[in-house]
Length: 74
Image 1 (cartoon, rainbow, N blue to C red):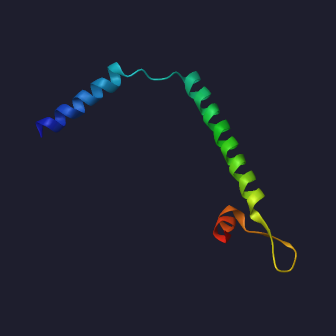
Image 2: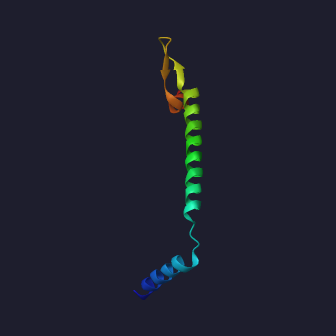
Image 3: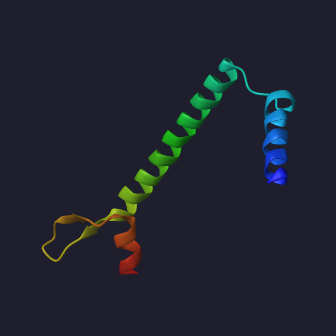
């Protein structure tokens, strides 16, 4: 039990006194960067899915199958 108490106490001390926490402005900038990167990646995946997803069906019309549908058809 002493080891657990010591671990918790040392962890608290490290978090309070040794860790450098980001400022509010740094957190906002990081959030913007992550949001933009997420949108770009989602757009790239959507475009890939769209380009590989349209297949001709037996009736001559277009059918949406998606990227996985394309890969399973190979």
